[in-house]
Structure formats: C-alpha cells, structure tokens
Image 1 (spheres, each protein chain N blue to C red):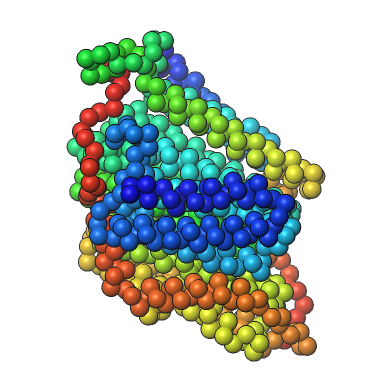
Image 2: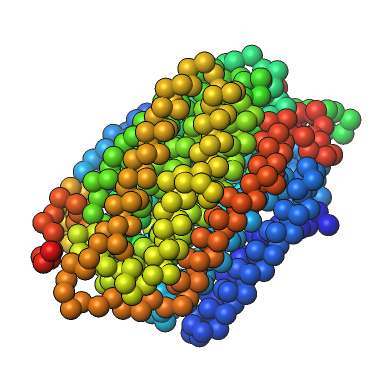
Length: 507
Length: 127
C-alpha cells in the first residue's frame, strides 16, 4: 500500500486532464472537479491516518532503490499539509459554485485549479529536491492562468509582476540546487541530509543554502521580496485569490522547512551552514512589522488581506528561526492554521463584495443588519487570525511565543516583542475591517445589501468550523505537529537510505 | 576549460541581472531568459565536463569511470523546457499588456496598482 502516497497528486492531475477534455460542458466539468476534490480530501485524510503513528510511507518510482529513485515520502508533515490543502480546496470548490460562472469555466478554471492542487500536493509529498522545483514551476504556471482568467488589464499587469518575480526566485533556487548537486552528488532530500550531516562547512554549501533561501523567501513572500504578492493577488477573481493565499506561500514555507531543517540541519545540532537562524529572525521581524503597517493603510479588503498573508508567513519563519524542535513544531501547527484561515478570510471578502457590491472599506457598512449570521462567521475568522482564544490562531501564536521563551536562542526576546506588537496591530486591523464592513451604520441610505448565496456562506462556515475545531482539539493537533517536527529533524524513515554515494566521476 | 566555462556562465548571469533591472518589460523578459540560460550552464557544469564516453559503470567496478555524470544533463533538459514555457507565458502576457495599455514601461503599467489604491480619492459617501 505504498502507492497511497501518490493518490493526492494523481487524482487532481487526472481530473485536470479530464476537465480539459470536457471544456464544452461547464456543468460536467464542475461535477468532475468537485468529485476530484472530495476524493483528494479522502486520500489525504487516509494518508494522515496511516502516517500519524510516526511511520512514513516511501514510494519509489521505477523500481529503483533509494537514493537513485525519485521518491514520494509521506510523513506526518506532508500528510497533514496535504489534508489541510484539500480542506482549503474543498471550501474553494464549494465557493466557486456561486462565484465561477460558465465564462470562467470555459476559460479553463477547472483544469487550472486542479493542476494547481496537484502541484501543491506534489510539492508536499516529493522526496526529491529537483522534483520540488518542478512542482513549484507547475504551481506558478497554473496560478498565472488562474490570475488572468478574466483577461482584465489589471490582471495582466499583476500577472507580469508575479511571473517575473517568481521566475527570478526559481532561477536562484535552481542555481542553489545545481551547486548542491555538484557538491554532494545527490538530490534525494533524506540522502542529502545524511550526506551533509558530517560535512565541514564549505563556501559552495553556504552559497547553495543562501541561494535556496533567496528563492524560497521570494516565493514565500517575506521581506524584502514580498512586494509582488500584494501587487497581484487583489487582481485575481476572489476564489482564485483565496486559493493562492491559502496554498502557495505555505508551500514555499514548507520547502523552507524541508531544505533548512532536514537538509541543512538547522536546529538539529548538525547545522552545516552557520548564520542562518539569526537571518531568519531578521527576515521574520522585518516582514511582520512592514506587512502589518502596510495592511492598516489599505482601504481595499483584498489588498488588506494580501498584506496579512505576508504577515502570517512571517510567524512561520519565526518558528523556523528559533532553531529548535519546539519552534519547528509550532511552525507546523501555524502553517495548518494559517492555510485554513487565510482562505476563509478571502472567501469571506468575496461574500462581502457580493452583498455590498464592492471591496472598498470606505463605502462598506451595515452588513450586520441583513447578514447577522454571516457577520459572526467572518468575525470568527478575523479573531482567529488576530490570535483570540479558543480559536486555532491563539494556540498557533501561543506555541510560537512559548517556543521562543523556552527553547529559543538567548536573543529571541526582541523577536517575541515584535511578534506581540504585530499580533496587536493585526487585531486592530481586523477590528477595523469587521466594524467598517458589518457594524457601523450604512454609508449609503436606501442601499440595501444583497443576499449572499448559500454556497458562499457554506464555504466560509466550513473554514470557520475548522479553525474553531482545531482550537478546541488542540491536544491531538499539537501532538501531531510535535511528531512532524521530530521526524523532520531526525530524518527517521523506515527502510532508510543506504550510505552509498551516487555513482559519479571522481574529482 | 572549466574556469572559462564558469566565467561565461557568470557573465551571462550578470548581463541577465542587468537587463532584469530595466523598466522596459521586453528587456526584462529577455533578461530573465538569459538568467535561466546561465543557470542551465551552471547546472550542466555540476555534472563535470569530460569525455564523450557513455556513462556506463564497467562490470565489477564501483564507480563511474571517465565519463560525465548524466543526471545534471537530464536536469538541464527539464529546466530548459520549464524556462522556455515560462518565458513564453511571460511574453504572451507582455503582448497582451502592449495591446491593452499601449505601453511596455513597467512604471506606466499601473492598472494593478490603481485597483483599490489607498491613496486614490475615495468614492462619495454620505455619512
């Protein structure tokens, strides 16, 4: 049953091809997409159930042995993130029933969306560094197609900025991968980890690590390379923006975890490249402050939320910067939480725009009168991202800060201070958003809010229930994230990698 | 030979970076394509440049003899295809921008920036 590890990729990839053939029948296309997303969720959940005990599933392609085969490795981290991504995909799929009409489906929404999901899951599951790069590029191509699906001027403009910056990031990543291969002769992540464990630091390894960092920081949207994100996400259709906000930057952070914790040994006592954790801390702190201040200045709900996407990735980076197993575990939990909540907020923004006719905070108001239940749902998500108990956002922040106090390096105090200030400012920004959209009196007399389609409310409700459920079931969630961090740090995988080098020419 | 090769890759990379910094989008696209080419050269070098002998391990031997490592060559093939695809998409977007906006200067393409710009005057509301 090792084949289970590929199903979360095979299902959306196959369905993507199928929906491409069914382009003339948008209704059939939509049904295929919905069935595929549901099946993907089941496969991911099964995978999580299988791996949650601490055993990883390794799938070797082509019948080769490791480290020669390209592998798919499903450990707790991969399985949990696949499951979270599938829940996000399900919510977006439900939302698109009301948001993505025939014209967008004819333009290829379903194949692109499913292709992106396949790429996301592929990136989570692959055990090979170059393979990871390929999934990143597939993710970029499909995301560009989704952003420009209406072919509006703003979308083309946003997509050019997004594509150009992402190509730069990919270039740095690829150069880093090439240097790493030239130095070690392997691309298998586990084998890289064992090969590098006893190495003396070298210039090549440092350059490779910093190149990979530059590429991944760009793709994860961290300071100073995040400006493409708020310049493009708000132009996309809102369901697409929600999917991108929930998935893409988190995949890049997941790659950071794999590359820096597993391969370069940050926080596992076998670090081969020095100076990384302080740099991570600087990146995280700068990103937090810049993004939250920029978010407060925004008047367009989508742009405001896009800056919060950036701000939340910074908390993940803070967990990694602590260079300890507890910090990594906190980052893992935070990743799952933020995937669910970011998507929920963007979908909520879509529902607000449907009810009020626009995204401009200066015009919004009074929605609580017509939509009292929806305003509660949106408040749950807004409070969760601000870190209010008992929602998952509170635990996520608490875990990161707790890890910083107990297990962080001695200089982690200022990082905690920045994180707390940012948390406070996030709460402020979210309160402004909620009160201006829902609570304050209507800005235009005689302008009644329109009804919100059931599909939109259901999608937002699903994610609000997830963040509440994750906050209440904190014990098992934290236990799982600890197992994930332990596996990631120790590289404990059954049928481990034999210690043979890849056949190669002598120097 | 290797040193010369490395300098060529580095030179291409430098030219690519310089062109990417341009405000003209076509120059930026060409710069990105130069960058991917330079990286492909570097990736190719990771497998070492050796004889044309096929990469087969002789029976009984543990290691590859005099031939180059074939894996980077396979990686370069993949990377070329991906880089080509992305360059084409970027070029298509550029063409689209030229047709709709009539400009290719990135500081004059402002439609994404203008959408929901917080500094733009707000709509009229009666409070």
